[in-house]
Image (tube, rainbow, N blue to C red):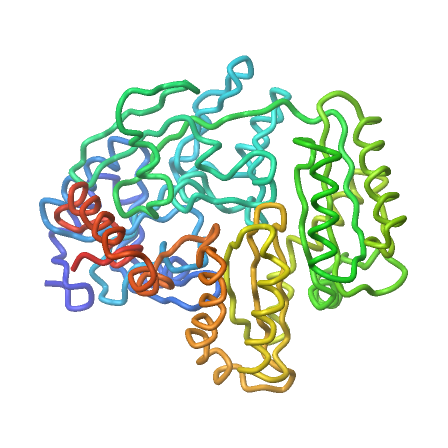
Length: 478
């Protein structure tokens, strides 16, 4: 037996033979970058990374894994934030990377669908859609490196959920390799298909615990003809909510983004992110980033954004505002929002939350969570921002100035419990778009009804009786 991994060298060689030695990583220095998640919260161990080139390769790997009870951790872009893509520390988990399975198999602009492999990079999918004058609307800060299989496995949301929905709404069909090595070809392109259980929805959001997504049929949309992006300075989340209500009434489905940002977040981004600047002449306690896209004309988008901001200024909800005058300026405004999480890193430790509450409860959540956090950690710097339009707030807390980083981060779960308690009291969710992974697995088991967790375990056992698919993530069955 291999003294490091507990897997015999002969068995490792059998796995390697499936994909060819040139598509295997064995050296520790080559494997190391794949053993840690983006925030450094989880570090694992693995004796080997397998890089299959086809669905059949994946099937052969999983068939052998089930026969030999060898755990397998699917990994795409390794951009997850809850440890779902990181192997355990035992050294017995093989990493299955889909980076070679990155093809766009088909683009059909008439039917508004695109078929991509699980390892296709999100930015490449966006470009393929643009190439036929279509839009794939999922947009994330990590879109240059995250991959479709991971996006689906975590039911990614991003900045356009308000208008287009999350990945569950953006997917029509899947191709999945089951732990047994069987291949389910569910690559259907139908918007209406009411033939029994919707198996697709079992795999979306399952974080690789039920099978490996090797292909997907994704929805495309007409590209917007007119677009306007504006930044408004406001006094409070309550005012932002009123402005959002007006924007929804005025713009309808043309309102594609409505983001909330605190002054602290703007200060962090302008301080630490190259090229980001505050376009308003004076600081404001809060900011609303508004994105309007129309399908008929640029004039319609312009009329909408001017009407909204004029109403906001007249009512006093908007203190000041700027409208992007070019595509470059639109990107600059969005860069401020999308880089807000990374801008916290130079400020020291950050305790993060990915939560959602009913949209109308956001002001109350902000108020109650702020009081509780400041009582627990005086001097904490709260950087709460996110998708006000769909109720998803990234409630991040930076350490007090001069505090010890390790001591601050040691209170992660304590503060999570405080913030999540308020979220649950408002009928919210402790995971809006990042998933459960390792980070929230035990908490999920505590807060969900017993029957709900039991049903999840029954599903896991039915699909993966040998428990080889990403074990220890989402729901424990050991």
